[in-house]
Length: 304
Image 1 (cartoon, one colour):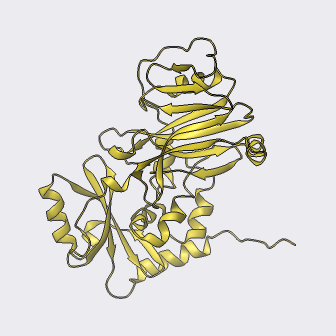
Image 2 (tube, rainbow, N blue to C red):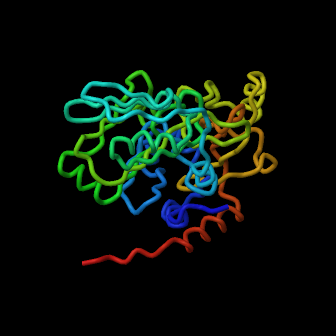
């Protein structure tokens, strides 16, 4: 399975495996950081994180998920509307042309990505849409945006894309979900946006909302948390274990049932990820793993 070219560098710099990063979303000091590092641009560009994104998927799972797209019946747009006139792409995206900008709002995140692109192209806008699996409250929100150099120059000149936020929808980092775009009429360049769609059974989420977090598990033992989840018809899909400065995923058979849960995140439909605080010293195999990853980290050469 193909991964994004920067995955190896990110893993080395973070000193933490991709899967292990997922549980860190529950830790306030890291939420804002992870909310800014998970957009996977398709062009050399500056990526900007957006609301509700699954902040911990950086590796193969994310690369595979971003390659997928939702499918729905859609129709083509008519000619350019006049100012203030609204055109809708088969209830997929509504675009309104204002005096100085277009306002685009996502209506149906299940629509085909090619039709999204066609909608923007009708206005001369080079904007592509990628659909990624999202937890229920993150479906339809914008999980990320990236821009090429020309688009970045537009932004620096005051003609950049702005997000339309929903104040009733929180993100893991404490911001608001983005549900639409304001695109200046003078915008130039290429931009890509990532939108959360409904996940298929067993498909790991890339974008999540705190509203979907399992509640009341912090402080329970692993066994108690598993029992509580089972009563709700949920099961654990992944266990992440943390020592100071290091975290990694481990199989259930490796984890003592008495260890305490520090948090939980939605993982896929009907499953969750448990973040667990390790007790006692780091075992030799984990120490070896940490040292191996540290050795494999890329060397950064200072420039004058």
